[in-house]
Amino acid sequence: MTAQLSNLEAQLEAIRLEAQQAIATSQTLDHIEQLRVKYLGKKGPIPQVLGGMGKLDPTERPRIGALANEVKEALQSELEQRRSTLQAAQIQAQLEAETLDVTMPGIFYPQGRVHPINSTIDQALDIFMGLGYTVAEGPEMETDYYNFEALNFLADHPARDMQDTLYLPDGNLLRTHTSSVQIRYMENNDPPIRVAVPGRCYRRDTVDATHAAVFHQIEILAVDEGLTFTDLKGTVKVFLQEMFGDIPVRFRPSFFPFTEPSAEVDVQWKGRWLEVMGCGMVDPNVLKAVGYDPEVYTGFAAGFGVERLALVLHQIDDIRRLFTSDLRFLRQF
Ligand code: DAH
Image (cartoon, rainbow, N blue to C red; front, side, top):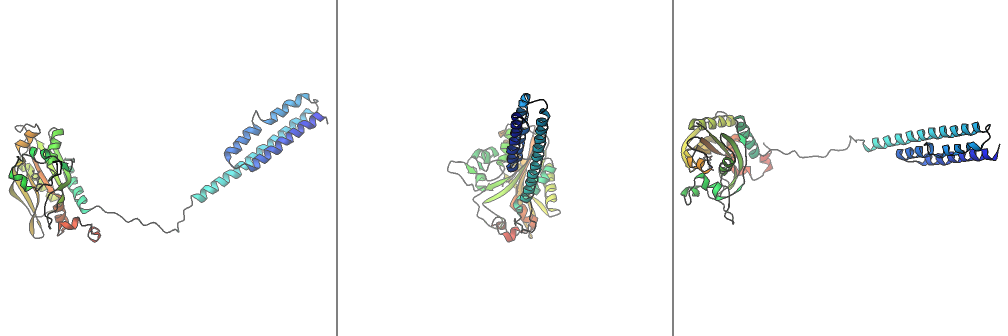
């Protein structure tokens, strides 16, 4: 054996040894791939060694070729083995990390419920949506213009005292009713209009079984050609019927600056009449305030007290129960 031959053989064995050690200690699949490229790739050390074969006696060349193949195959199979070992370990680790312990005690999340005020609003809006109304909203802080003036409350008119108002230091106010949104909606939309507006309202009212200083209303407004008081009455009746089923209802003549004629509607509750809404035909002055022609369009409107609807719906005896947050009471709904 020539010195040249044993030198090449020694080089191949050194490559085998180095690669074997690297493979055996490799910890990731990425690293295995790097080792494959490094030791078995076209630019790896084995082709380089084979490049030195030119200096060998032709009879010696097959030995080196055979050894090179043996080293390559050995490294290939070791890479493969290490790869599957690492893969199995990875899967095992993942399985362990994702294991569910079904015997662990659960975490208790108390279940929330919809507050009866909100469920009453939802129920009422559902009925109006079924009648073709869209839902809109407006701000709780209002200007005198939207809450009063555009609704035909003249300055210093005694009608303003009907709604004991909470004024803000800057001269604005907390809206006393959702009727303010009638104006805002009509300013931004052309007739025909069918809109239902839920919202919070504020008054300097003394709190008792049927009054609160903060309460909710749902306003409805319809403006079209040819609407009459019978349309209003029919709408209100359908609404109350859907809401309460067959219960006694009565219309009483009333006064609101923004409707003419006007009415209040009472339903039976706990053996007496309870007023649940004001309503009427939209006053021509209100239509004029938003630039509608009252010779072409008429409209009707109504404002419902949500708390009062809830009292009747659930036969609750006192409005204060709705906002004192007593869970024993609220859990019933
Ligand atoms: N805004 C009135 C109130 O809070 C209720 C009301 C009456 C609303 C007549 C209306 C209406 O839309 O037409 O007392």
